[in-house]
Length: 249
Image (cartoon, rainbow, N blue to C red):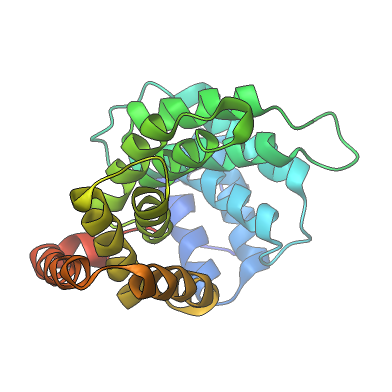
């Protein structure tokens, strides 16, 4: 098969996707583009998702948020009703999250303007229908925004994402329970527990701010809260090795 997989009319979209994936991981990203475009143009959502990610990140191509937006919007429009249990559901949900993120910020010099209401709708769909942890995290954070603040709804969505191993959701839920509008020993314990779980897992760009949150809360906590939260954090880590391994952060 040639590098330009799309030129061969006898190749299926699935075969083109597989070829594009091989080229991509071999570092041959120009050849990958040919195959992925053919697959996407012939109705393969995973190829469209991969192209959207490449354009949004400037990965092997010149960064182009408009092209990325269009790929993600196409997926959201055509595959919103796919079964949440289908193998491609995580990629479809991810396209919704990417699309919602564009509506949060808008795209410079384009017709795509910030639209918080639209972003909330998109995150809500992916969070509810697909159960996507990233969408649940973003939705939780939107409920913490001053313009539509609802800390109990925020805690609900952040907790759903945190239980799936979403690192930032664990940290923000911990912060909310420990320092927010919740009171009582149990909430302090739960808050410091989630902060401790997040701190133990944090790395890279997230490590500094999560460590700072955890250490500040730990320093203010009573000894009984420290002991109980540490015990619960250890138990949670031991009970959820597969969640931690599979979580998308």
